[in-house]
Length: 591
Image 1 (cartoon, one colour):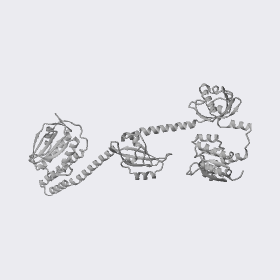
Image 2 (cartoon, helix red, strand yellow):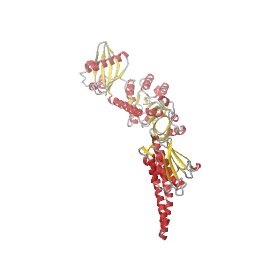
Image 3 (cartoon, helix red, strand yellow):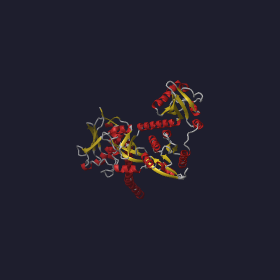
Image 4 (cartoon, one colour):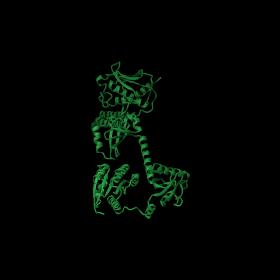
């Protein structure tokens, strides 16, 4: 045989970077490799000069039907030209079909040392083609029959009979019996009435169609434990009987892998559909191709509507140009996170946290987007920010406003130490009282964001009088003109009234008259002081706002917070005597 072997390599696609031609070129062998794409490319080269090649090597990129077409095309133009077919390990049917169609060698891909093994198969195929064309002797046929790795039998069929004329040890082993128990017997005698009739029916189906038949025996197989694949082919006739060649191989592991794959797909589908998160799959152009039940429930759209939408139709926060740029950078398995705002069918929106993963799929890039409604989380964040802001405000006020009475107290102590004058002690006590008032107000304001506690029916007049007694009211007068019983938190209502009454005494004067009366859906607190200018009424409930020289600025802010916690509305207006009048409406009144 010549030293240089001329090879025509047939690949499936032009972009196949590691096809058989490339593998053979790096094998180190004395090969001259011409690579063409597809069957049309192969036919063109063979028609140009079929004798220019010693071997054809078909790449794994061709499907089973195309491999058959390739083999037919080669045999039509040069019947003796050897053909080596490479197949993927997962493509279990391609190898059998290739041999069936006349392939000289079949090479399973991937394998370790691919170049070396493939080169060896090519040399073997070429060597076999040029060294012998003779028919095998009977002893050689017997050797092949007995040592092939699958179970083999010759079946003889007539109009009213079907018998095994010969079988090898491997078939007997697969059937769980012995060669003498098979040869000369019918399928019913060998495999019993449960399986025998079906097996004979397959044989006759093959004979009637005059073509090969392949089928799987299972899930209850020949020995009741494993799966088998049987291939049947007519091989001629003798007298009144027809003969079939039957080949049987065990395919349990393949079926188990397929079953595991199906189970895995079912589990993934269940996870997809029943996930508590919203899931959609979209393509590289942003077109939504699939959604799960949670996505449909949360947005209110049905599947057909969603799959007519793009990502930016659904997500108001998604920018098409930026999104496409991000997806182009992603490789299969890559993950990204983004914030979104989903638009529902009813026009409402809600914030989302979106996690995107690039999927590697056969029909183009797909992206899996898992989204979660973060409305509650955002509200908690806002509430936390409000609390932080209030804390910062308290710190600022305390650090600023407590400094003044502390300085007064320090000056009073210094004056008392120098002169012993009681006036200094009195000034120091007033500074201490001022700091106590501020601390009480700060604590009350800090608690106003908490729950108001249990509501119950309380007598408003009694709570007003108790609150008045807790204050230093000097010559001020309280007039209670209500007998309401209202639903409220007694403790928080007392805090509200104490701050409101103290505010009246501090701002209206020591001899003011404070009135508490009834409204149609609440109550009011009014004084006869100077009142509050209309321009300032929008600011009086802000912290640190005060018109009194020694005011803390917290009193009315506390009043506002407690009223909000009860669901009451406050209206500030002018009293009949020209003073301030605070009206509380929306109050639940018990008759």
